[in-house]
Length: 231
Figure 1: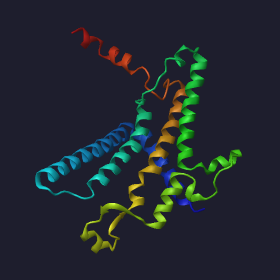
Figure 2: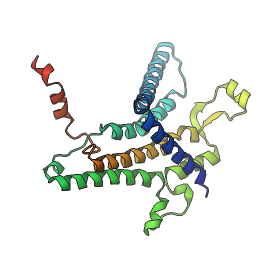
Figure 3: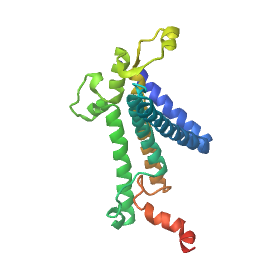
């Protein structure tokens, strides 16, 4: 029961994303692209300013390294689900393409299921006990949701990132930024990865796509730019 509300919140997020994508597919894609672009731009800007400040003026922001490290983790955790959605993850498909049609499809479906299971295990592996697996019953050690909830309850601060003084005065917050804020993308990113993997499984089942991975992107790029290459 300790993890009930985080799990319900993640389910609500996935349902809202699914409903929004059905109504505004292009809008959701642009939103995802803008989030990725914003994270990349922020990392680049902060790193650039920090280098100029440190080597040009012998000063700088003490929390810059931790801030950019967190944003880079956010970029990976958020971007992996977008990569599954767009079929951008690199993979080797030379062997499975030698298989006959039905076998190829079965392997592709199995790969999508394995990706979803991987995300769900990292998210919360307590559900494996339903399958008879001997797992840790301590909810704090059952995956990303339990770890995040543990940090949320403790309120432990980060090492270098600190709230500005006006925020501390206005809201009475602690000095250091809470770790649960930095780790928020961990359960969200894994939830989105599981959702996109299940979505990919359905698309493969319906014949709308072949694989989750992009194993032959070079051939596709050559085909798309065939006319340009001739010029």
